[in-house]
Length: 196
Image (cartoon, one colour):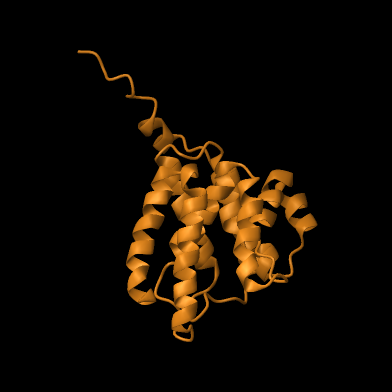
């Protein structure tokens, strides 16, 4: 009996031979943990590194599904995606530690808070769309992770805005990963209960 052509190559090999390096993961994780060491997930007592771990877990799951050509790039950017936005770490430090492709990806994922709020996400998405699809996937994974019960101090208008923004992210980036796009679509649907 002949084995199916996919045996021993696709799913099995992806799981046994991941396309991302554990050493690279640990390096990025340590860097992010140090940079975010005093921060908590907003509205909780959970260390911020947990959010970054959840985002990277979404990327690793997409990698196991065979959808992340350069999972090392995606995993590093997932762990580092908020260091420029939320810490004192500068671009040149990220570039020196992780290389230009990672630094450019992290910069694209960084919201420009100097812009008025309505302009921030369109600006960020414009920069993300000019990056490799792995960076698109990080933004999908980030919003999947963030669509949890909103902080208690958020107004209903802010919750609705966040829900609408998730729909915009899905529409703009869904082509990068059917796996992550489906996950985000489900989270958007669940989050609608908070927005109504």
